[in-house]
Length: 163
Image 1 (cartoon, rainbow, N blue to C red):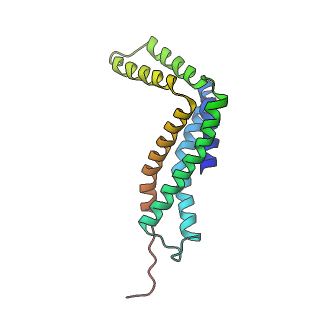
Image 2 (image 1 turned 90 degrees about the horizontal axis):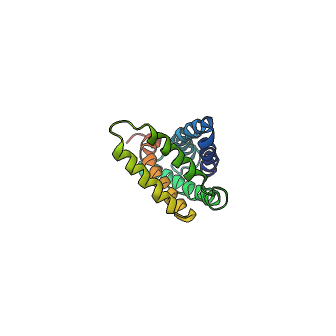
Image 3 (image 1 turned 180 degrees about the vertical axis):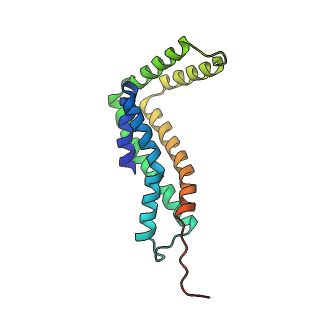
């Protein structure tokens, strides 16, 4: 899963310049919970010690750790990108998008524009390690949110005999 997240992240900076790559990034992001489900089912059916059955807590802990370790592995790719490759590229593209929206604002967008500018300013003062830690915590939180429904769907009880 972590390798998939690193592969998926490649399309984010590319998508800032070419919209088709942003579409690919979005589609791959939507695929993450389905891949997590398939991995959890594979674990349940092949490696669970309960004859193919798995309880909610067991499934939840597997999914949570899968997403946690994936976010840690992806953080290596994020750190390498932001430390050696980015050089302010994403920040520049975000500022360009903001300037484009700011030229023709809708009537009730003033508060949103101020929040967006504040977010860009905050991002501008962060170093690569801080950006990476922000992405790790974000990925772990999303992993927690994805682990709950995945575990509810993956759980399976095996009845052995009639009691």
